Length: 178
Image (cartoon, rainbow, N blue to C red; front, side):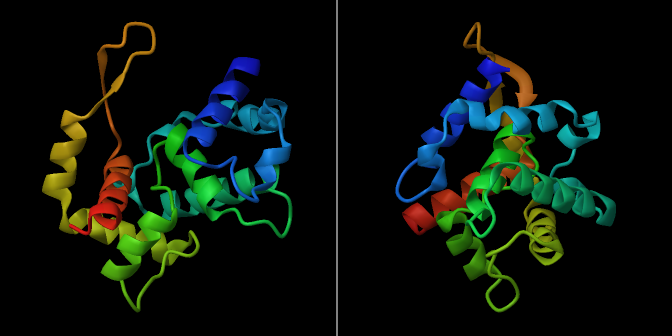
């Protein structure tokens, strides 16, 4: 449990979730214990949902999962979108992290339709449509980017999820403007 809490905390810290006025600054790794318990209790299907499988049923599951993570971890009346979606991306690989870079890129792409200021059916549907429109490129990048085995440092046969590739696109486009 302790290792899992520390790994989750380090992951979030590496993405800036412990800086500024974040409530996380006042928390220790122990704060993640209930969340790690929730993650461990998830059905195997929680790890199989990716942007290419955003069916109505899977979208409902993701929204329920988002709300459960938010309830477990985030105090009421506290900003949660970036934190919770970063957790869902890092743990399950199921949704992009809705940070400011992602919101900038995809808010421009879906201007007037979705601003990505919340995770809901509309935002997930827009992501599904973006994936379908760019399926060949996203699938190609996903199939060539492998995760790394912790012990050996060697690439595994487990590719980045398509949601991670979409996340990387949103970040890169906002940073570089291309």
